[in-house]
Image (cartoon, rainbow, N blue to C red; front, top):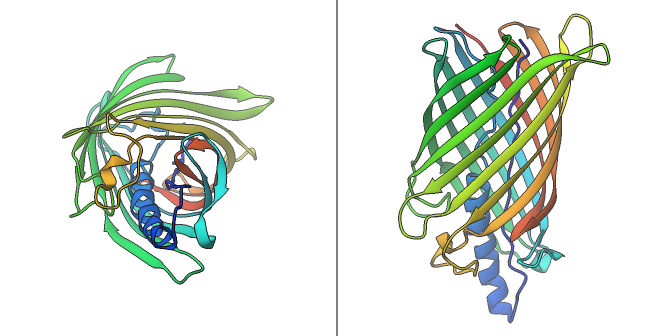
Length: 304
């Protein structure tokens, strides 16, 4: 069974309407706060978890990711640089875990910690740091075809672990995610694929509704099955009854955005219990979001 790596995603929202020097400063704050919200919202790790974890087995995946953006798309999908040479950077640390309860049920959990910064050439700088949304859930493996192709469904509850809205929506949410995964041979190489789609709804006033989707195809590079290479594409669509206007006093108003991204990854298995993955990705297009690039390193550890 192949070891599946996480595909990271990150993002930030931009506002391209500037009317005065004072509003440029306010825009910097808006960039940071809204960028933080969207970055955390999109940091839901798509752990290509279509392959089952055996009963009594534990899978852990600590990771670190770097994201950078200095331009973005507006509501009409027009791409422009941030005002005054502005740039947004984020470093996130995350821990994902999955524990096998039975042949069909597993417990899953994920918790990220982020450090977000927005700054521009005028000397403006704003940072936000802390833990974000705890995700806990249960995964059910619906069926398999000859133990090669697997179908699963996962229910997840999202709990904010922060005060204020600098690091997220500060709203509970629930998500239902469907996965399809399989393995086989492709041009003489062992290969695997995963396809996932998750629908998330935030509770409370005008809570955002989001669709997160991804697909990954990977194959081994050597006969010993130590090295693998994968290509992933994915996207994120968010909508809300609130408008997409920017207001630094009501950051949660920024809940209407979308983007698509692509990434590549190289993985090396030191043993059955320990693997390393290095990934790089970039946004392809978007709406009300930054045009960002990311790099990440993650480990797959099987202590049990």
